[in-house]
Image 1 (cartoon, rainbow, N blue to C red):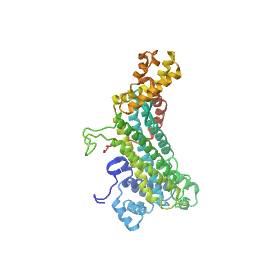
Image 2 (image 1 turned 135 degrees about the horizontal axis):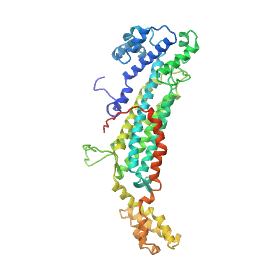
Image 3 (image 1 turned 60 degrees about the vertical axis):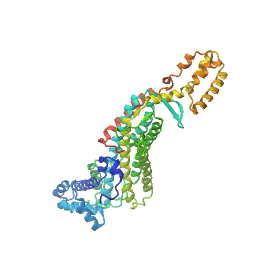
Amino acid sequence: MSDEGYRSPLGTRYASPAMQTLWGEPRRIGLWRRLWLALAESERELGLPIPEQAVVEMRSHLDDADLAAAARYERRFRHDVMAHIHAFGDQAPAARPYIHLGATSAFVTDNADLMIMREGLRLLLGRLLAVLAALETFARRNAALPCLAYTHFQPAQLTTVGKRATLWMQDFAVDVEEVCHRIETLRLRGCKGTTGTQASFLELFRGDHAKVRELDRLVTNRMGFAQSFPVTGQTYPRKADSVVLDSLSGIAQSAAKMASDLRLLQHEGELLEPFEAEQIGSSAMAYKRNPMRAERITGLARFVVSLQANGAHTASNQWLERTLDDSANRRLTLPEAFLATDAILILATNIAAGLEVREAVIAAHVAAQMPFMATERWLMLGVAAGGDRQGLHEVIRQHSLAVADAVSRGGANDLLERLSADPTFRQVPSGALKAELDPARYTGRAAEQVEEFLTDYLESVLVRARPLAGDTETAEVRV
């Protein structure tokens, strides 16, 4: 393709080189060749007369596929798998008669897709752990920092900045549990034959059912899987794609929730995403500092969530042993979903590791609302000083409504001063009323919940996930 042709921005701007390589053509064909090698080795082990030289030549050409030669074959045959069989045979002539022996195209295409998806899940799991590590540092640092909690995006009671971060972390931790489950339970298609009956392999082994079953087990184990699907049609159940896309959609949902919260908090001036020294927020408004990373997360997440429906529709519309209406859709949906989720998690880690906390702004917002939050305690102080509970409540209600109206018009919150001057509260020292304005007294167990979440729950999740996670290089964030 010329440089002027369309290229997906997932490849040119967003996804990591590691994820792009995983879904690239050289990697896929390398897996096809490994599958053909595993099939030949297993058939030979079970007694088929496949020469050692054939296996040696196949093993010598696993990663040097001539893609141009394969493309020339495909223009002739109009069949991608047959094109690569011929190209492989050219490089391994002793193996030519035995490549793909007894197999159907889905042997390489489906098994390779499952292997790529599992490796992609491992890579995403590593990225999830990186997000959680960055958020853990942030949560610990701000575990006791009081801030306004919001319901309906209206000031409610107080929480802490660290406690709020654990809400994001819990979503991601649920994703970790789900991805671990998918990695642990994903099966290979194995050697099932043209319509899943293994008839071709039964013929190769002259009716020996035990050898056919052993062939399936040997190939599955050689490709690094503990199990294959017990039964298939021509393809593995497309339900497997659907549940993997469910997992990716879940990651996107978690990231979008965090990103949306951060966009709101950046508007409030409380938390700001990273902003580089020479970064430009707007081409026209030079003063602007926009939450571009968080906005990109929400945009990419919307795309990933929408792709989940493709997997569900494909799984529900496969006819009998198979139809081909899945092929074009899967070629688009599976790679794009993995690349977009990869991009989302790279951004999420970058944001979490560089969040800027504006403590003065947070404190000002808390101070503006504290008198309202202290009214219940002031009521109790008035009762303890001998006042009538219902009368005190009415006085607080009237003053609170008047102050709320004044605040909405830009005035100051002088509720404390009003109550101190009201005759109904004359028995309560003003110092006692003021003492109730300490924000730390209103955050409940938020700080303790942060430590309990990290210690009692998250650590066990991480212990399970770390051995399954793939290595993740630091990826550049292009804003």
